[in-house]
Length: 330
Image (cartoon, rainbow, N blue to C red; front, side):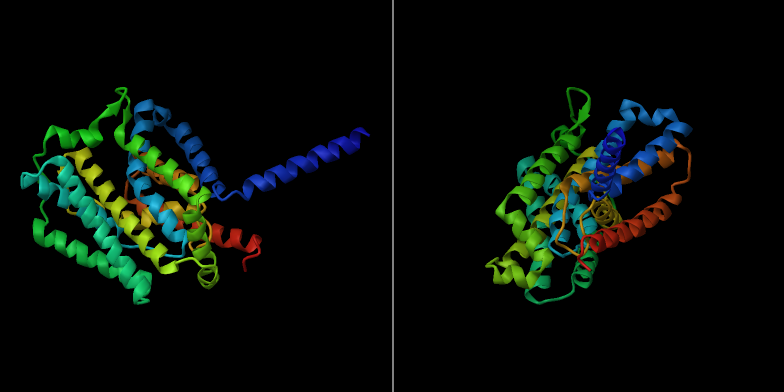
């Protein structure tokens, strides 16, 4: 009798472990746990509260963009222009402030500019059926070109304290505002994606576009809306980054597109569409921010950063493919 109970307990534990490992977020949790353990052995200062908050702030800037990117990739899309739009948002806001516009007007103008770029991406891709990779890569060059011409590749500084306060303020004197913004946006994004008709429509489009259309979903409108949201939040991230450093850098978002999409993929969102998790994307952003920070804490050259990020991205793709295969999608 005892043997049977032990077998049942072992069987139950085995099923629980398998169910846990099949969670899409586990692709991030395990590497993050291993990273923290390794860094703790080398340098315990990694777990200093100031350092942890710095990691969360860095992850917050990425996560603000990762939320709409989760929607986009869940719908089967992609966007390589998010880094350029991030820089664009900060630069537009900076120019508006330098022109004497009130802060709210400058922020709204920058968000509108980012949304317009996102909308154009959506129209070009959806209406004219151009490949998202090529279309958004082209838009990246266009936006970066506009930034280079208008700024002459020079940073813009000399902002008011009210603008700096957008990111430099700390809630309770401890928690940076970008972390608060990211949490609020993440909560709303999670609810919309997992519990609303719009979220289910996005996942349906990514799962099977034709079936979604036959089910009465306005596929084109939904896709354009998601691309517009990506532009909006990319510009928002750019504004907050400019506020954080009190400088609008023409290349502030350069290189972030692949890092953010890698964070979303390794977090459990399928790059083939049909599956997405905001919580996983948050963990993915924290993982990449932690790696970047850990290299500094352990005294390792940052030249290793791209190599490590590239390996993680390749691993994430294999994990995604394996998960889809186990789910009977192939």
